[in-house]
Image (cartoon, rainbow, N blue to C red):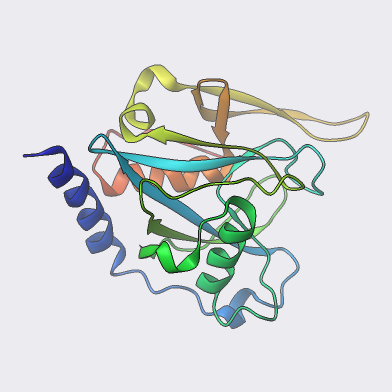
Length: 206
């Protein structure tokens, strides 16, 4: 099997398994202040599947400095939650919606620390797509190969501390890769992808 064929098979597996998921309608989340839509961008490099992440700016209102997928709140201009995810990905990292091959959607999930409800979508983008961070919201754009996401040597824990002088701290499972910490809801979405591709299980109670 060629590298390109391997990537295509991964994408087809994801598409087939997500075909049973009906994306939540816009009306279910659009009027909630704690709702958002995100895009998990996938691309091929040297035949391997890579996932794009962002590290949020230290100056945004919530989840400062945390690793996430491009995305954000639903605006009145968004006809669907997918439209919201694509618009936000365009604004935050420069991925034009017309270049995204939408593969499917995961069921909605909720963050533990902030209670935000998120509608995640998966899309394939060109490997040479130009990416640029929206400086006010995105500190860094990076990608992680599927092989690293699967590799147990990159598994560990992250200690989260809430804001304020009396802030509590809790430890959460994480993927630790080249100085980046993938945890919380972003980890759960990532693990859902790995589960679709039949990798070894890794519990993420986050």
